[in-house]
Image (cartoon, rainbow, N blue to C red; front, side, top):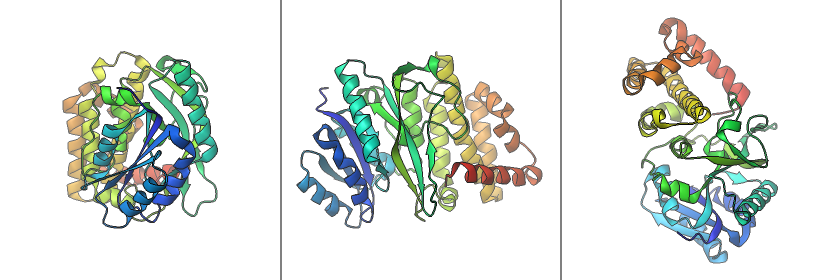
Length: 341
């Protein structure tokens, strides 16, 4: 298809009237090269009305798409259908982009297209904007991914803990997303892991821009990543975990670096699922923990053996009376270091 814009930014929005303006104001400096698709996902507040005002004021930049509620994944699916940019990024409605970094990324995208050297994936840093914290945690990839040039998986170094490529850091080539047939499950939280994980196996070339682009806000009590909400929605986290297991055929991944990165990514998501089940602490949750690891072993015994031998696997196979305090202790330590949740 012919792409009319340089970049499409999908903004899934559900009852976002209190913070949507901050998000959209940060995206407008992209000018007419950037298409901003606000997907109102059946909001019951004034989200659609607010987005409509932006559409009226900036008709060449902002487009409002209203739909019945389909969840975060359903909103992203709709945005992908309407995307007309060469590249694609998702910005959640309570997050925003840094203006200077945004201009730098657009400059890079422009140059890549002019030179005919378009990578499948562009990566930039993101920042945990944690409420009440003066010092912001920056997740960067220095020393891991070569910066400011086209690179391949063979050139990627080992990704350190906490330096995984998440939705906040990725800008995919739109045609790649369409070619792999990415469709996220509806009415399911935590699909951002699928959004990143599923297309990665088709990525051949990427480009790392070492700027702090995405500002990831953490602090609202109703956010899906809040610990109590993750425990309450653990079945949705488990669904995503199992879809990651089923949709990416690791045995067909030829590049060794990519192969191991996909395993490590799956490992961290499985660790999150397992930790939340351990934190919940009921017999039902422990049963689900056993079933998750049994499913991994049944579906992919080699992947299971790798996970089982890892530190994560060893912790989660300790007797619960002994392992549970250790798991919770290490989780709290990592939480303090990396600033998530």
